[in-house]
Image 1 (cartoon, rainbow over the protein chains, first blue to last red):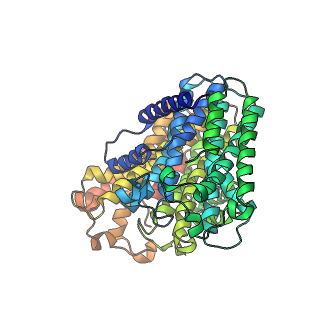
Image 2 (cartoon, rainbow over the protein chains, first blue to last red):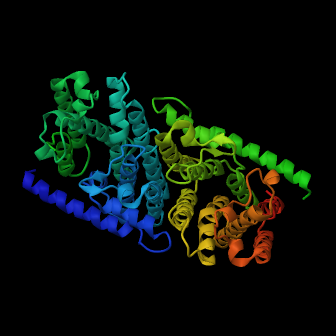
Image 3 (cartoon, rainbow over the protein chains, first blue to last red):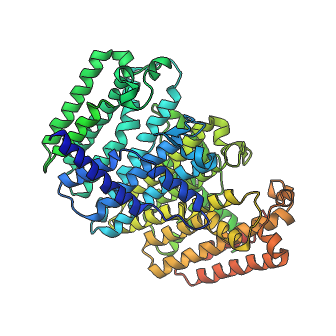
Length: 299
Length: 299
């Protein structure tokens, strides 16, 4: 796929996700208006919409063509957003800006930052629940909800965040621990995206498992590439300061394995993912490009 | 039902809930151990287990006798606990003690307080999701999950919390607003308890709606009674300081409607609830006693 075609497709898919988000975000009225405003602000402030795009595409390669995927598309982005809103809180990373805009707690106050995150997390399940009235196969929707909760929770994204928070500034970081953090904090929600798409389209258990492994490789490669770019990238291209890991004397995949091995690892993980994808049914070209974009990216 | 028999039944039901909680709480191990410990501490530090007891009883009066209710029994107490953990945070009520024990953030730090609350909320849905493999009616379980999310979320408990936080220390409190806060912050989760019990036991839509109304009356009466006890109770019986509303010049149901009308309102709501309960099938005696206990309580 040439890069112009890929770029155009990405724009189209992102617009599709924005439309779905607009449809499923709550209306801003009633006495609880402020939290609804803060939730909507947090979601619409921007983002690449990677997870929803991955979910939609996974659904399509397995032949899915119904509306039942849409509540889950909105739900996964709400969950991703809640995690950013809570990560930015003063007691966590204490970030006042994200993507050049005020973070939720910086704009609406700390209490509302906590509540908007809680609101998004709960509303994600409320939204996904709408899929029950859009299917004649409630067991499938139930399975999808379970995967969403599992991959977002203590054995998924949240678990990774906990290990990360607890490791910060402490010695004893190992390759095993870093890989665990990458797997849980970053890969888990991507796993749920590809798995839920497959589940709702009626893919086999084996195919759902393959999609989980693909997303795991992509998620881990994505994070190693993040560390690589912090060393080799330029602030101009990345749009954020580089060298922060070195300044913070942070143990990363690179400091433990060296640059050459890290670059090779990203390449291998990316090739593994693409190799597995090619064995899936349907047209996987766009999803292959997404994998390349995420792992061999320059920013 | 005499009070000795009632007391004994309450003890039995509470023990049943404790057993279910023990079974469904996550094991404390792995790299994310601290959050698992904080989550377990928060749930097991105590509580009356009112919502799970109400759910179990509602399930039984509609003839339910399967294990499928248990994941939901555990889930609703996790959601109730998460709401307390986040309410206690420094940016919210900033409470260091609850029921004579350190609150979660006071014991594990603020970051872990936020994460433990998030963990409990997510794990509640993960736990409830286990019910899909315990039923041959996934649509029923799906409906129950939706009710749980709705009643916990921005149009339920969380919405009430937002309105409460935003009203604090500001003039303009009205009877309508107070009732809205009571309905959402307190009644909504009780509504989900009685509704989910009924739904999983296969009650009719009309019966589910009746149970929702019963819980709403009970929740509102419970909160007005709380305000009444703050005026008429004694610290000795309540186990907490009285007169805090007056000291904080807080506008309550009592200050707006007067003591006599408030007492009459509690009585009326309680009688309405009991009247409706008696029209439900099965043996509703214990649930009637629970309603009396919650509304005509002295502590």
